[in-house]
Image 1 (tube, one colour):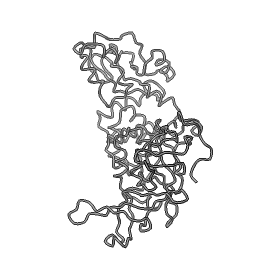
Image 2 (cartoon, rainbow, N blue to C red; image 1 turned 120 degrees about the horizontal axis):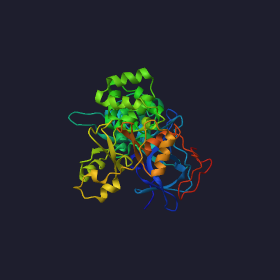
Image 3 (cartoon, rainbow, N blue to C red; image 1 turned 60 degrees about the vertical axis):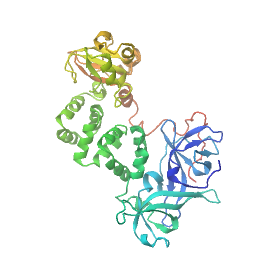
Length: 441
């Protein structure tokens, strides 16, 4: 299929990125555009490409040999795996420029003269020097008459003013296009995308997301970013989001705040939501009690296999948390009644649905204590080949459970989400290694 030399950036999103031999590198998630100087035609510098590892890297447009409706093909399989970082004067087309406000002075559209309109897409084209530049802008005007939204027009870049870095920093920019991009994405991937954006743009997107979505995304951000996002929310919404978070993640976040601020937020939370968070905050963060969740899967011995499996199928559970069901005497809310044992997911799958979990209890599995160190927890998982384990106090009450993802979050360097080892040397499978000097031209 013939390659194109003109394309709208929104159509690039999701396209496969291939090496010269057809090997898959990743998918296009955005386009990096230079908006350094007023009056200078913006250049499309490169693609923000998401690898299979979910890391986003920068691939220069000079590496692109062809663009067709199915894929973007590069002239080399060797690319820099350094994580994408925007430089001064650069912006992401989809995440930052679309939905921004500009003015149009097109002789063919006198009705839009000096009117403020929204950018809904950018057209880029390749020049004779192989550079890619922004040549056209798709815009939508405001509502006119009984129309629900304004008409869409495509105008030459030269007729548009206001597409500058300073304009992008002004408040009031829309977020419809970037939210559309985030639909269906995992919370961790949305968090990665938000980390690439300026604080102003990130806060606009957070303001538009619902509380549950923000809670999920917040749990995937580094601690410093978590506290920064929370600081830019009004108090009532910050409380709502903390209530929507898992108690252990809410406790971790509040533990990063000054004691007076954390206590003020806890006071405004619903007592039923704040109570488990307060209990978790009593434990040192470098112990089993400090990293456990207070909401594992807990049932009584008379629960049927079918009921237990229904609990396991909860899509909100992580795979680690869904790997084991804990059996107790009532009450089942932590701290529970006497802890009786556990049932592993594999055991549940082997039993008739009408049987009860009390008949297949694993009572021999050792328990974790809330004061156990992280080294003890690590050895526990390695010894018993587990990804989730019970935390039980001296009175045999189940306090919660530690899963391997909670443990990794704690034992990895604090900035593990931001700094990956040997970023510029780690090869992508089948692609070769970093090529020194490849970057923005």
